[in-house]
Image (cartoon, rainbow, N blue to C red):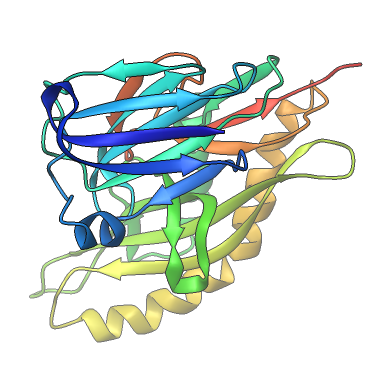
Length: 278
């Protein structure tokens, strides 16, 4: 089993909360609602991590914002480890994610945006080319998501592909900012190849007198492109057919299983891919 005990003060003082994983689940979620209900939001100052299985790497991730968003810090451990202070993350934790990793030491860790960001953006541009009033206004974000309860995906590791767009409107109205969103689930097919499917989609439109009209045009476009998004992404994933993958799961940012790291969930989303070529 693995566990993390978070403390109110430096050097393990004050009140504390135990988050444990006795069954070696991939993810154990201590949500904002859970911590806030214990009056433990934004007061974590130190932590103790414990593992009873040294062959299984574990990670404890602290998140600044509710629903496992915003800035985060990840601490790696496979035995007893104490962190007596959090000088750059003191009193900021709103939720905690405890992970037990695949014990297979052979793993590839691939940051999606870093690996294929330009290809993703080009694929999006190709889709938007047929919509004269819409253009991409920034890089597509690849965001780790573990709390999509709106579609009953709480605790399910997903990657949100979020596309910032500009909706061009006729004079005298100003152009409107919006975002197209596709949530992706990665999985292995029968040949142990990496694949993905779109499990949810949505959009956001900045407030405008034209919001209703824009939504009426944008919604069917977003929905109709689900199959194209899946097809283009799976075409890209064929480049990764060089191993016999045995599992796939996600971590935020440009991840590490065996070392500490930090970042923001909007930085990137990493695929963790254990493999066996035997």
